[in-house]
Length: 122
Image 1 (tube, rainbow, N blue to C red):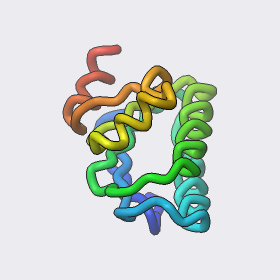
Image 2 (image 1 turned 90 degrees about the horizontal axis):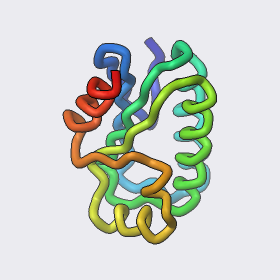
Image 3 (image 1 turned 30 degrees about the vertical axis):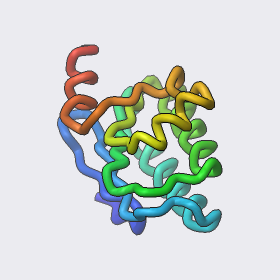
Image 4 (image 1 turned 90 degrees about the vertical axis):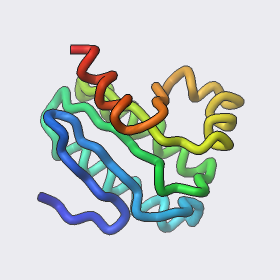
């Protein structure tokens, strides 16, 4: 299993659950490192794998990070998988709503709900 500097990755059945080590995702260099780790994870999983991104530990998320989330979404979709976000702070949800990213991403209240949503889709 790969070791990540910015991510904690767990396997729950066929789902990869990703938590972020960084509380603030704002620095461009850190965002690039996180994206590299996340994209590498996606590429190393089998086609059709599902991913949950858990933002429980994140207290700040820059707009540059949102661009990387969109790229991750497209990468996962192109591989036949699904992506769900969970445990997003209310102020982030507002940004997702204003930018209409809540139409792109399925945002669930917590990790169990996100995992259950994948189970229900089977």
